[in-house]
Length: 104
Image 1 (spheres, rainbow, N blue to C red):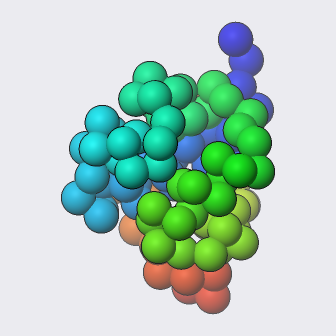
Image 2 (cartoon, rainbow, N blue to C red):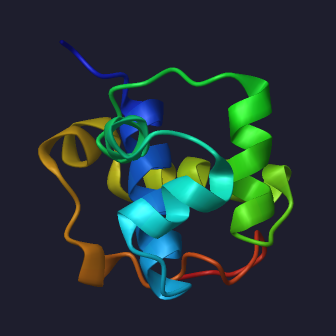
């Protein structure tokens, strides 16, 4: 299955922020009321998720949905589609959660 670059970038953002908040994938799935494997597929960029589920993720991460989406857009802008699809090392994604005005 081919993933869209934005879906992959969004998944990277969710995975990084989830880990920074101290959630395991399973505990995060419980909080957002989604199955653990579904959350994993979001984090891998395999899902084009609904607005309702986007909102659940943002609420669990305690950030506005617009900021969560902006983080994924910044990741794509900074690394480019090809690099995101190949995989961006998590340690390189330092600015996530710092707000939409953060400049790396």
